[in-house]
Image 1 (cartoon, helix red, strand yellow):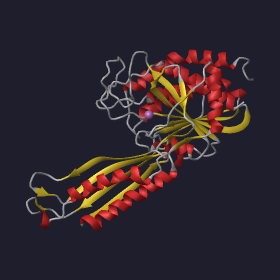
Image 2: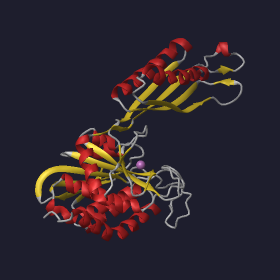
Image 3: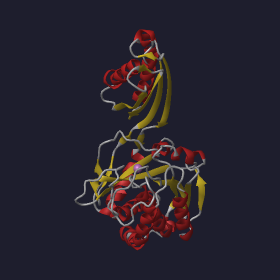
Length: 391
Ligand code: NI
């Protein structure tokens, strides 16, 4: 039976679950685990799903967990995905549940995400008889290295999924607010390694050597023309060389230089253009600068493209539950491997405001302190979205 007043039913169920969710979030926060090492976190998730009587599978994509809530009637499969991994950052907050692991911290709020999806599990479990369809709860490892989604999908986590919802906390939005972006919202993330080989020699006799440092410097300068001269100005793109390593001292021309870079794009044609251009520039360097170039180019994740078929019902449901409409926002050139799920089924990623009053927080920051109220608010919004989509 559909509750007479779904808003109230969800609000009350969330309020009942909230103290436990906060306790679990703090427990996870104290012991952050890096990509594919989330065994303790996955254990907390599995134990909670077991306590709620929700059938689940562990070891999906190495350290992921998938639970399933079957509705009272047949219908589509709606996946809701949370990520669980932490970052290699040393926590600098003074909170009493700060990380106890040196050099590791939940600085992207994935502890918040894990607790939020456990809250959704608790609320939807009770509403299951009213649902027409299945809610698949996807607890994903290794988002920060953009590999966990692909690993879970390889283990069947996206099989049979008709639509998917993701979410991320946003400290630049005050707690209590929600946001969305229509269409491409997060960038494709690709990366390259370029080894430029010259011929080492005495710095005083460059004519007798082939200098890979000067050649690699040319590559870095030329790479700036990829976005400015080759990609359509209305298609956002970023090419950044983040590492330039070579040489040892004043008077030696080294044998080789190693560059690492990242390419972010929102559109497939910009993505293709950037890859082709960077490879062409590396090839050209061999003729113009006498070096040899060896480029390894890896496409990590596609752009995250929100689909109106999921976006519309979710933002309508959030408005019904929370009484205020989510705010439209701008795309970001950051990346998220929820895009792998979105590439396989219509999907939408909801932004959940997590900014605490008076704080100016950023993600991936040693001082990050999301406002924990975003957990309960996220539980309400996501539970209502699932309920409305599956009834
Ligand atoms: Ni994150």
